[in-house]
Image (cartoon, rainbow, N blue to C red; front, side, top):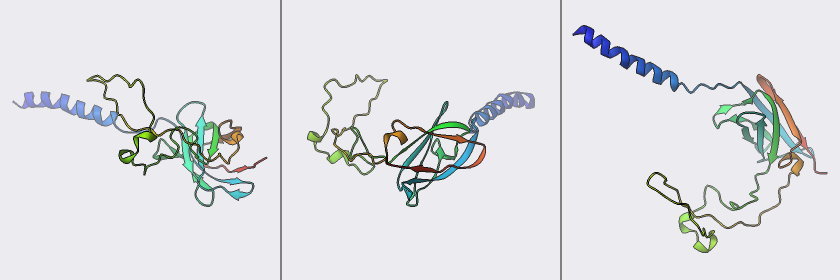
Length: 175
């Protein structure tokens, strides 16, 4: 009886060990902690979105505080950015497209149907494909991005992230 019990425990223990190792959540990328200051014409730039995009891998993002300081986060919960060279984009986050005016507080349930886009050919749904349908607001005219394109959509900014602490400041200027 003991022999049978031991034989049935070994596969269970092996299965548990495999699951624990497979779900360890460890990161296989080397990150460097990145902080800095963003200024425009010498003045701190508040509420700017900072994106560090490496040649390979996921970008890191951050938002400046009221004093222009930022900290980067990788994949939403790990501080830092992938070690290496990055293309850097800085924007105020002004919505420039069809989602203008939509934020976390938008109430789609009480949205007037005249304010939504008509979908002439909706996606095909099957039992295996459950498509979420939601109201999509019409494109709206928005405020112009105050940061020049050479710092965001056509960025010329580059930064090297090394292992350890990195303080990377940017002083933007409007030509």
